[in-house]
Length: 79
View 1 (tube, helix red, strand yellow):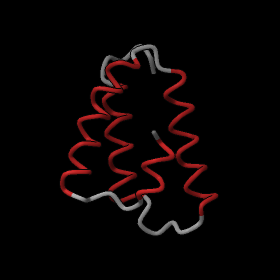
View 2 (tube, helix red, strand yellow; view 1 turned 90 degrees about the vertical axis):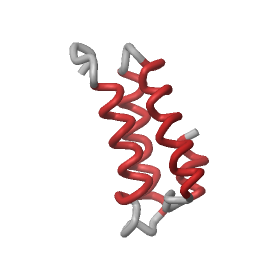
View 3 (cartoon, helix red, strand yellow; view 1 turned 90 degrees about the horizontal axis):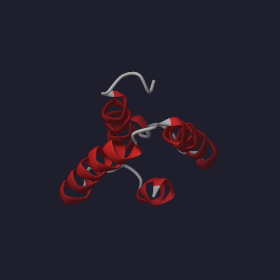
View 4 (cartoon, helix red, strand yellow; view 1 turned 30 degrees about the horizontal axis):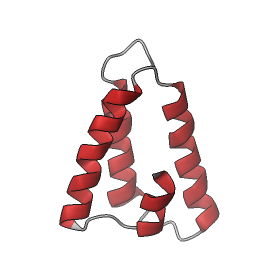
C-alpha cells in the first residue's frame, strides 16, 4: 500500500464514497463503526498521512457545503 503514491488519495476517495453512498443501507451503529474502524486501521498503516488528510479535507468540505453526507454521526466519529 505504501509503495503506491496514489494510495492515500484512493483511500480518501473511498471514505468519501462511503459517506455519500456506502452507508445508505446501513442502520446499525455497530456496522457503521466496523466500517469506520477499518478505514482508521488503513490510515494508521499509511506513511503519507498528510496526503490523505489533504484529500479527505477536500472531500469533507465538499460534502458539508453540498449537504451530501448520509450520517452526521458517522462524520463526527471519523473525525
